[in-house]
Length: 257
Image: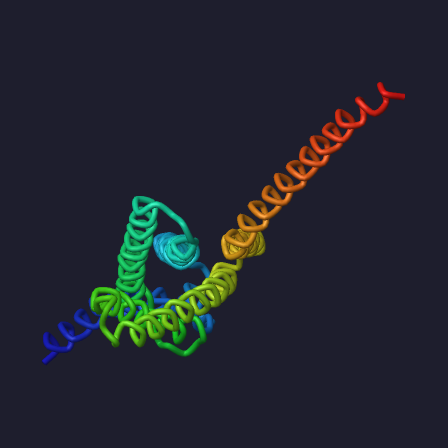
């Protein structure tokens, strides 16, 4: 009986470190965007987890903040009139390629968040993120199901594709800001610089979008001004020529006098 008692005590001593390590692991499984636990271990993030958070954020920024806007602007440039066929094909290829790479990066970022982070979906960043993943994948599927141009369903497809694309762009931008806020909250590091840089990037993208939207009007105005200048110069030359003829006709009369 005493031997059994000693074995039980020894077993308890052996299990104590295992229980302690499980508690430590549980405390390190930090929700990237949720409330911070008050345990001493959770106050200091695992460097590997911080690195994974940064990689996750960079991938989603590259997808939503760079590639998605490139795809939107490239497809908008196709609406400019009188463009060569080769230019239209290149713009369409740029649109498709940028969106496919963006979907791949979003998928990798989603897998990373599922594997490495504690997804409790108790905050806006995670809730918005899961909805964004679904919309992105559905938009990619919808892009491959594009009906031919001559079919009636093409108009409905275009409207749906445009609405989803616009929604992804807006929600993606919002989620980047919420992700920066979550990163600053979890790591206790300031994200003001990254927020300012991303805002400056968005401003540049907006200016490019507005400029290309008015490019056709700018070109038409330039053509109109050139035509006006040519007409004005031709009128001046015509008037000078007519005045020269009048001078030549008046010379004989002056000679008679």
